[in-house]
Length: 95
Image 1: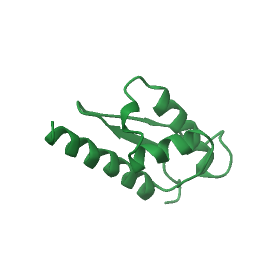
Image 2: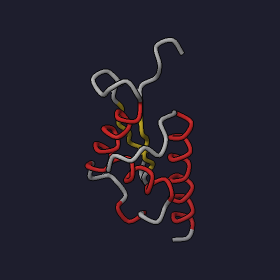
Image 3: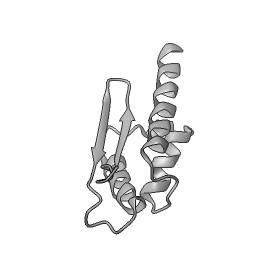
Image 4: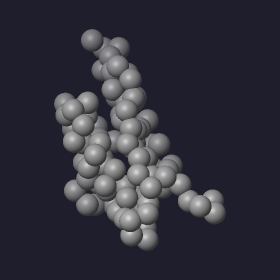
């Protein structure tokens, strides 16, 4: 990946998926600062599922928005998205 990737965090909801992304430029040399900026945008959105705080993926997004760096690779954030998606589907099916 000569030019890198664009940090992006996807959040599945019961009605769809929303995401935010930012280019790394202007956020330092590493991707963790950019992911923190993206996470702040994600949790400030009114679609952010506030009732899923026990979900591992949601906890990772919240930690990242507070400046912690749980992961700075696309693969890590795919696992976050899948954790939230699976939990949403389980709750939807048990309603």
